[in-house]
Length: 194
Image 1: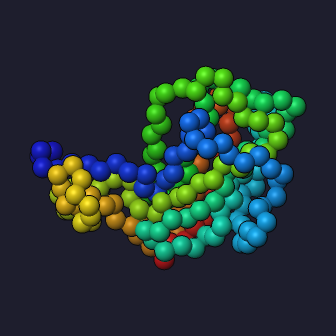
Image 2 (image 1 turned 90 degrees about the horizontal axis):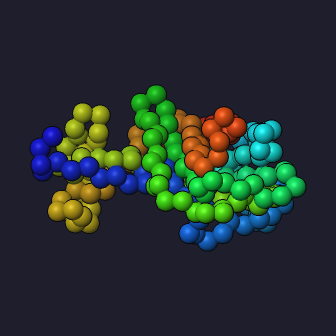
């Protein structure tokens, strides 16, 4: 790869939310916020070993490619007390289809003594509908699209990931910080990009 070619890694087609070091999520009954309309929800997944139900709710399922898609990851700890995690609870929500993959990365820092409260906790998510990376030369490089012109960053005038192609995608939820063998992810929600 030549030195003039740089990769831009962004939170594209994904959102990475870390419960530690951020505004605490709201804890509420399992009802959409008042005034919420058109909430699309995946069925809850029961994690019997941890007594956790996970569900993804989106405000809509059709959005213009390149714009943000808002929703909530609902985590219901039905156990009688908070669930302590070893290194914090992190998650990423993105879009995927046969041509576009979703491969989030998580940071390694840990939040000691972090826990998931008993009851329902709602974590806001924003799914970005652009590519996760692009070539700063502005030209495609293999399977990576060329970046679009944008603010000067890292010495290149091409720094903005392009929108994903129009079409039908499925949400993908990736969770980090809970035992793998005990986690079943929520069913994917179909999303159409126009």
